[in-house]
Length: 357
View 1: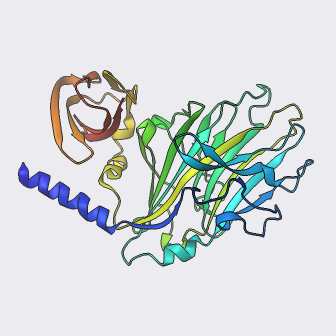
View 2 (view 1 turned 180 degrees about the vertical axis):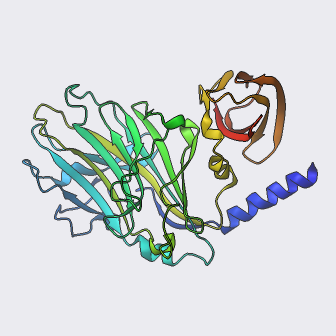
View 3 (view 1 turned 180 degrees about the horizontal axis):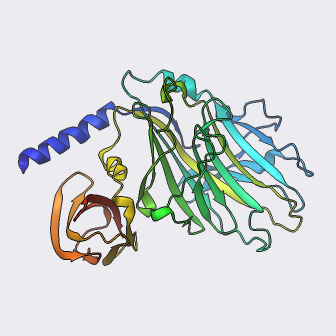
């Protein structure tokens, strides 16, 4: 057992020391106020960010729509707002040069980790116009192709994976289990993480607050000689807008913070569990959980036992079940944190990520 733990520790340590932080932005060194003095889409403002508005806006975009502000318990953040009542079109803030940073990575660090924090407001839109306000986070490669992208609907709080003009066009991916819809609780911050494995043409999404770890088949159908190595990151684009003539719609906003781009030697171990197709066949709720977590599936897979590991690979306990399709796992004894549940079933082992409140 000690040998196994030593091996796990050594592996985690080797992953950590090979991580190479290429870009780190928390806006704390910025001056409060306007991100940029212009909105012409070509002149760089603070930190090299450029701001612009859509070409179809009846009310022109203004520098006041892009602000550096103080946020309680976070320091400075950037806030992007839509135009006033009667306006439509998108306001975007973008930054180029990520290909230069990516090309400076250490040889062999071919896993890209992109992370960003986003605050979603309590937007009370018109129910008859559910798509009046929306926002996107786009990490582009050669435009208009995208590597990593998220879309957010301000009206209902739905977060989705986007692939408009992606490397595999027409492939939006759902973030919830079993292709369900994911709706964010408003007035909260969320960390969104996207991993791209250039060596194996694979991508993974993680939302730690919700315990979501998901493999997304966005890049693994590239046909030779085409390969992911041909698509480095180039530009990060943050946008928000009202994309219909919603003359009665009130302005909305999104806040962003702690943007990072890291080059890793390999995919973190907990992501590889998301490559297991069995995991997506199980629903686990609530997650985060306090005392009891329910685990179920509609595929008649029988759960024989569940083993709990912490994020450092330490085995905490194992509970045996009598080959049930639905089980309840008592986690009252666990301290608050993140855990990996290994579900031994009659069809193999499925790994699920659990957050204990």
